[in-house]
Amino acid sequence: MHLYLNATSPYARMVRIVLLEKGLVEAVTLHWCDPWADDLDLLEVNPAGRIPALVTREGTTLSESLLIALYLDHTYPQRPLLPADRLAEVLHLAGLGQNLMDAAFNSVIARKHYGDEADNSVLGQRRHRAIKRILEQLNRELGDAPTNGALTLGDIATAVALDYLAFRLPEVAWQEAYPALAAWHSWVTGWTSFRETAFV
Image (cartoon, rainbow, N blue to C red):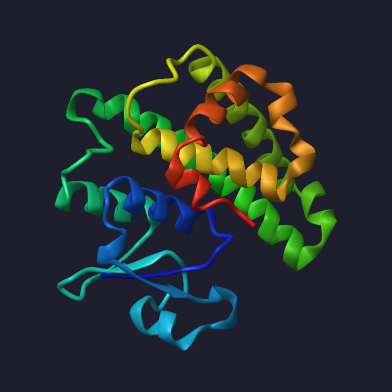
């Protein structure tokens, strides 16, 4: 398999963590690229120019991080990240993580192209409110969650989103505002797969 990615994409990091947790690192060749530079190799496999993009053993290209994760979990069922007896619960958490990731990522991109005034736009304010609401819900739902057992896709998506928020939007200071959520986050990010893929 071949994975197209870069080092600061939260979406690509999520897929890398899935590969590590499922013991598939040796089965994948990583292709580091810049999606903003219209990288020709990336465009050949994914005309949208987005990462991550996974080319399967059969030569089929998959895009969108959650879809790639679903494919990997279904095709390589060892160490399942979507346990059947908790499917709705795990997908619920993965959805919250994905929504938080989207709001944070789009805020970063808007600033990159339009400057800090992007935060004051209608869309910027809407993203800010969404981030606050999601953090409050995650704090309620995960503040008392047990910090043991195996990782799920929900854990991965949410912890990566929180890491990205701290990495790119540190002024949100969610760790100080939500100490219970920060404790849960510390448990998840203590796993080797998170340490090996940390944002730099």
